[in-house]
Image (cartoon, rainbow, N blue to C red; front, side, top):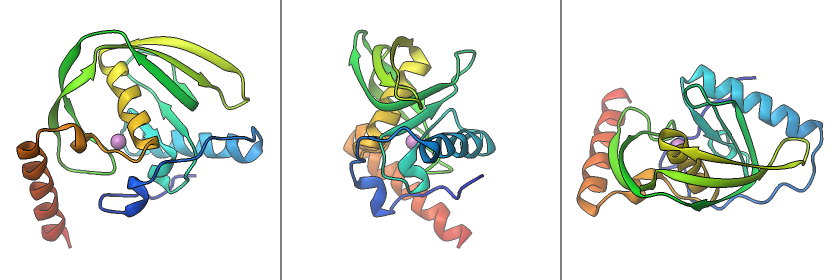
Length: 165
Ligand code: NI
């Protein structure tokens, strides 16, 4: 089922999500719905909070990498900071350059059955891991921009929303 995506400035995007404790049909359905919603929106990653569910779950499908289900994820930065043009389905219509994403990360997570696994991600997929984990902590990529860039991109975003309203 495709869900509406929660957009900035919805306060839920600023809350930390809770660890998943039950690996049941409800979680499996959530993961299915998240992939469907993400693909429908042409996204490469989606966190549960973006459809209003405050659990630490993210899904990703970046380039030729496998589909990833990240439940209760954590990561360690292994690489160097990179510059990257980032966007977010919850801040639609604008993009901007972040400069602090690590270009390589080691990720630990559970899958939807509760089985632990780990993998290394590079470049865009590494950035996606960091972006989605930020969502689970109540952060948006715009928080990673310089003050000047953040003001500018949010102003563009607000102007665009006014035009659409
Ligand atoms: Ni996002």
